[in-house]
Amino acid sequence: MPLQIDLSLKKFNTFGFDVKAKKALLVQSEVELLSALREMNQAEHGWQVLGSGSNVVLRDDLPGLTLLMDIRGRRLAEESRNAWVIEAGAGEKWHQFVEWTIDQGYPGLENLALIPGTLGAAPIQNIGAYGMEVGERIIRVRALDTHRLTDQNPWVELSNNECQFSYRNSLFKRDPSRYIVTSVRFSLPKNWQPNLSYAELSKYLGIDTSKTPPRNSSSPTAKDIFNAVCAIRRSKLPDPDVLGNAGSFFHNPIVDEDKHRELKEKFPTLISYPAQSFNGKPQFKLAAGWLIDQCGLKGYRKGLVGVYEKQALVLVHYGSGTGKELLDLADEVRQAVTLKFGVALSQEPVNYPQ
Ligand code: FAD
Ligand code: NAP
Image (cartoon, rainbow, N blue to C red):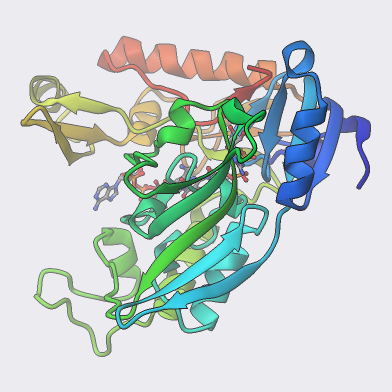
């Protein structure tokens, strides 16, 4: 696709907001990416990257250059006694990639089945679901360092540690206008064990996790888990092709022990889980969807946008609304939760233009 002018992005974001990109380029190789950025006048126009647009709110037309990532390719790069190392391009579709790894006999990503989006976006927010985060399997991310565009070699290869993965976060999310991911390497273990830590998943598979090792008549394969995750997700989440959404709209908030105790006393049915401690002090993760639901907002509709009727953490777009209307609704939800629980919700999708 040559450079497009005033391209409608309706099909390039899962909310389906109809905004335009002033200039848009489908990027299919590292060479194209580098030359496009070197040629443009960044100071004047700026740029942004879009994968499948499943974690963004497009609130207005996008100025500058929009890079639509489409670098493909996937292969077994190395094999050791303990692991298969798989390398794939940033433009691969995440779910298809996961399915391919399993069909090739490389298990380890099955809990992350059916997450929309591109492979290159997976490290950005360290995608996670059903008891697993992608950072557990990434060994290297290759990216263009846009702060070094005039260097002879502006490419970097970041190790897992350098990516600074944490809960739905990473170096790339903290410093959003610096790196453009072009490929990722995963290490998939040969001594694979099923991850059944997520209660809904083990229940679906009929496995009793109170026994060690967990029991049922036969141990699930990676494909069984993949199929189970797909089935659970299809039953609970809206299909963006039918109803615009970006999955969870807010992060699950993390609170300290005192706040957790206070909330638990006031709301005994509060849903919470132990989270990673901070400075040696215990912390707790609250289910943001439950907080929103308790404010009576599940199924709430405000014009052309609303709160999904089956999962309050998902905001939806019924069609012909705007990103601004959605962000107004998000503010309303946030205020209701702050008022009732004294807990601040932070937004997961990124707003563009920034
Ligand atoms: P985009 O939305 O296009 O971009 C997201 C951000 O990443 C933007 O800031 C963009 O600039 C940046 N970006 C994209 N590609 C690159 C790149 N190559 N280099 C640098 N920056 C880049 N997320 C989860 O973590 N877990 C889930 O279970 C989950 N379920 C979802 C279910 C539904 C129905 C939907 C709609 C979304 C869900 N999401 C989930 C959110 C989303 O799918 C993921 O965050 C996904 O990784 C976003 O990929 P994308 O290609 O659509 O990224
Ligand atoms: P759910 O099962 O209704 O659970 C609600 C929340 O409780 C989840 O957000 C999850 O946190 C937490 N939780 C449940 N069991 C847990 C456990 N054993 N240990 C720790 N935390 C636990 O959630 P759901 O909405 O149907 O989503 C299912 C999974 O898919 C979740 O992992 C969720 O993150 C993921 N998902 C993410 C998005 C997104 O856009 N980010 C969209 C849809 C689904 P965690 O979120 O930390 O797992």
